[in-house]
Image (cartoon, rainbow, N blue to C red; front, side, top):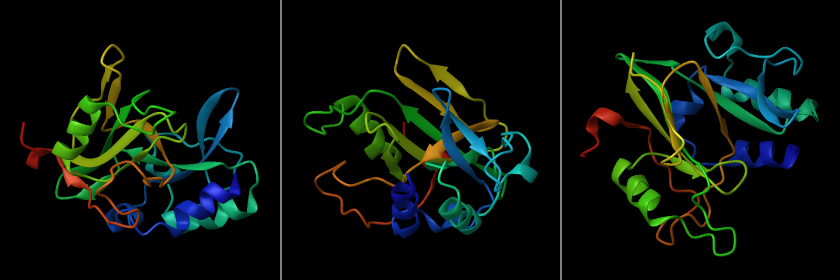
Length: 184
């Protein structure tokens, strides 16, 4: 899906701090699972090996030449300096496919966190990308329909934000917000 990669490359709403961080990998769906790959498109990337991660522009460039690549990933736990790392929430099945309405509980969390957010590649979930203190633990809570990752994990990124909230423009840039600054 080269069109999704080109769309992501053109998005002005992707935080510059994320674009500037060497935390990106190529992604493709293999045997029913999203997998992360190095720039050659054949060698799997490891979420706990920064030498497997690349800069955003290199990934976009490589994806243009590799038809099997259909999305990009960020590595959670990538160092941003000042003791902060990349992190993210993954909310599953919270977007109504018929109305595109976001579950009210998840919408409240998105607004409270106030960081960059987008649809998951499936279009039925939401990702909120944030910064977090280094050493914070991952949380998986399938009963509540979310996971939080701050290390040793990849999150797929597609750049699709259109229509999440009626009061938001698609090209509004939202910075990555530090979790320590979020009230509640």
